Amino acid sequence: LDYLKDLGVDAIWLSPCYPSPQVDFGYDISDYKNIDPQYGTLKDFDHLVAEAEKRHIRILMDMVMNHTSDKHEWFVQSRSSRTNPYRDWYMWQDGKGETATDKGQVPNNWQSDFGHSAWEWDEKTRQYYYHKFYIQQPDVNWDNPKIHEAFKDIIGFWLKRGVGGFRFDAITTLYEDPQLRDEDIVLDKDGKSYLNAYGDIALNDTRTNNLPGTHPVMQEMRAWSDTFNSSKFPGTRVLIGETYLPNIGELAKQYGTPDKPEFHLPMDTQVGFINKLDVAQFRAKLNDVETGVNGNIPLLVFDNHDNARLDARYGDGVHDTDIQRVISTMLFASRGTALFYYGDEIGMKTTPPTRKEDVKDPVGLTGWPKDKGRDGERTPMQWNAGPNAGFTSAGVTPWLPVPPTAATVNVKAEEGQPDSLFTWYQTLIRLKKTNPAFAHGDNLMLDTSNMKVLSWMRQTSGAPSVIVSVNFTADPQTVSLSVPNASGNVKTLLKTPNATDPTSISQIQLGTYGVYIGELQ
Ligand code: NOJ
Image (tube, rainbow, N blue to C red; front, side, top):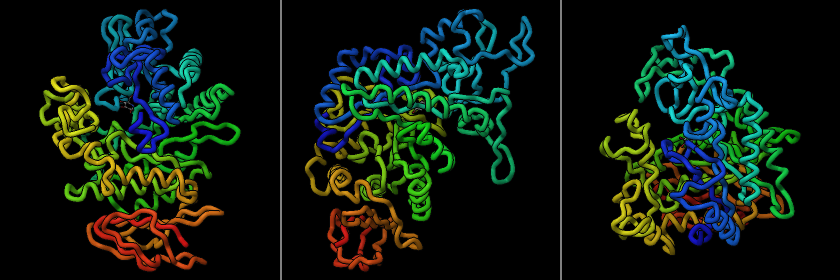
């Protein structure tokens, strides 16, 4: 906590730490009102919340409402008989052409996001159940009002304990097409169907993702969560959405309306997962989220536990640290809330398993070798260059191996070093908290025909504007910016070591992947 406070973090989203068989590393929950014993107890959790609060850090829980573990009591009951009161808490269907002796075929072509059919046959009660994710993660039935009440009860349980809010997992997949229509096949550029990494025919997901039913559910959860604002727990609780969506219009809907608000902060995954240093695309997508969400606060995110780390998606293997300065500048110097993943601040590298027998994440086994799963981005935090990178005691085997890069990429080597990536993150976060334009100002793109350097201005009334220029190339660049009614004089707030202090914004020189941030005088 002290480390995070020092970095400037003010809220931590914990991935699920409830009791779980750990098939999907906590995203298969068997008891929503407890802590998995391998992490501690509810008492330990309360202690964590209290200690975090002392440091002005809020703890956010992961709320998984699309599915439970197959070991959750609700599902154990549900699968015990067709007449059990919990039967319609999940998505049960007859097989196509099922007879007394033959299970027939799966109800339709829907696939799990983790490979193969999304329907699993239950021999005892002779029906299929639907699972968008692993077989051990049956989807709950949101047409059943009891599910709404059950999750409100769980949300209330954690809010009463003082959590700062939730990140809602897989929230766009709560509902499916009631007519159970097949998904469409995706065609490649030659008009042919093709196989995905799991060896299945690639399908669209229009029947099982982003159906309108999620909006009333989120309105209900928001209204419920808002009732927990009280003198004991002042301040609005924050509701964050895992919202992978195709365009800004769909993202805008996730905020709801002033009368019927939904998420405070649905994640914008359209900027952060461009996965290519392309100036035009970043300019367009950052502009979309500035202008397309009705003035709501964007939540930018470039990295998480489900995707290869930044080095693998944006790096070139030579200038990875410089490129991470570029990425983190877009994250922190844009308007909105910034979400980042542990280890980004020191430049931890994606380290996937090299042998199939070492894979922990089941999708890595299904997809091997095309998709090696998500182990590569979930390795232990690298605190120092000692045994197990300081993550656990020497001689203990951590759950995933410590990457060899820990010898040089670690907190101890970077903390307090003026030119380290850690200090870069720390400074950007400090600017975001202390400089008014940097903190709240609007984003206005500058020099918009430049395809090598992305420049923008942050402006708010009553405070000097801030300009930001980011070189997306390995070659030195010079940019000439002009801002109406400004003298052009500028004072440096932050720059990469290879950028020079300009006397005017009409002449900003940037080295390889250089960044310049200055305040207009
Ligand atoms: C999204 C989570 O981030 C991912 O880790 C998980 O496997 C799926 N949802 C299913 O819960």
